[in-house]
Image 1 (cartoon, rainbow, N blue to C red):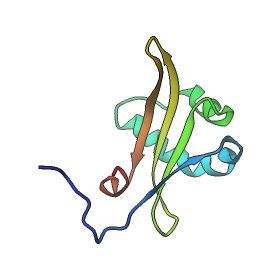
Image 2 (cartoon, rainbow, N blue to C red):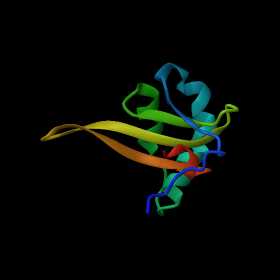
Image 3 (cartoon, rainbow, N blue to C red):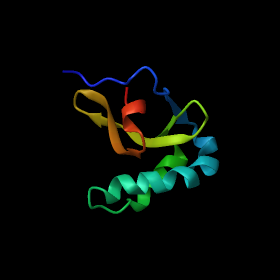
Image 4 (cartoon, rainbow, N blue to C red):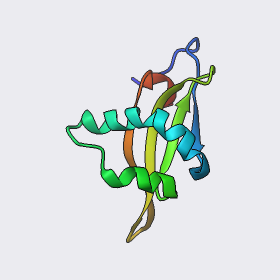
Length: 101
């Protein structure tokens, strides 16, 4: 049986934050990113904020129809023998059933 999102729930948009806007949005998103690490018993890596600010990692925001941030996702492209692989480094938020689809 597949999980599904009921039609009456609002849909979310996943938005990639450009590095030049990181200074405005990172303070809002950082508590959610930190929560992702805390939930698995880790501390937020000190280098992560710098990687986001430099564009070495990407911040994605799950935003509902009213513009409220429901969740955050941090990704980075990593070189592997098979080529570039997208690594999900942190994911946290509210109403996951809405924005993971």
